[in-house]
Length: 446
Image (cartoon, rainbow, N blue to C red; front, side, top):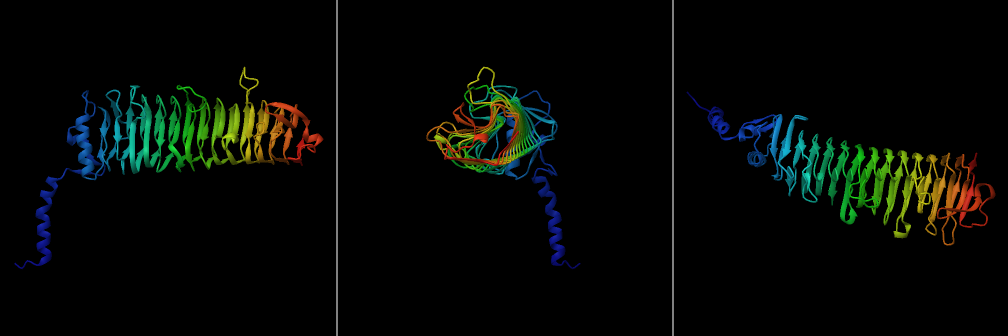
């Protein structure tokens, strides 16, 4: 019998294959089965040790770890770089053994968690930790997971680039999804319910480029258990984080704002639907430069849109194409700045918005001398006592108020203001000749 080279190689491969199969743990289409490492669904015992061993072995093999349906009691599971854990959506449940995160990664490169239900049981977590806590990684992904009753944050991220997709975070004691110093993060199509403080919070230790995208999420029933004057109680909060995009979210019933940018340059708040807000619905405040607030709907708030704090450097904005209605004055605070559709101060254009039912004023420009280069054109203001109020105190800057339609403004269509006090007659009718800094023309008043 003649043995050629091809026959020899084929024989060697056939001989080697069984031994290789015996040496390696079997990998299914779903990855390594956690059961082969002694992990047992439904066991009353703490399975942290067995799960940790399984996670380490799977990561070392560059394979996902598959968890079967059932309940697993565990905590303080450390995820090495590249760890992937996959369960069956709604059926694979991990319950914390008390006061500990379930998953932590200090080097979260390429870490993936998918299809898991994580239950914190309300046990208090250490400060700045979540049921999932991921730090210092690129390519991290949490998808199709449920995080319930965390005693701290739901998902905590620090220095992370990656994606949080299609998750549900309910009843977190603090923030549902909190990111510090993101490196390229997308938070999309998640459902957030009843967090204690903020729904989604994007923070930087020092003001700078962030670029997180918050897209198409549902956020509801945001409380404010920590108090303060607006740090908490928001659907989405960006603090010192530049170039954040907040787009297409459905936000209902927040103690303070639907979307709040604080010292956040070039924030884009676009196409969000917001109902039932306890303060300003859409807010860009303090030392920011650049805000686009466009094509949103707001039904129910104290103020619809506020672009404020020129005294702190807050300036440069576009407020366009929004529908804002039912802006109420706070009971018992008749002198407070509320019941306003749109409030702006500096270097801002306000155009093509519709404001209906603002209990004090449809649009307000300036606060005392804090007014500069504001254009208010092409808006529709209905059923507000004051159509447009503009600051005319000494030192206030210029404004153009033109081609607006103002209906049902019983106190006046366009009035000069000293803060919240009306100090002129209706400038839409008598003109603004005595205020050289104002240009008022082409408005239609009914």
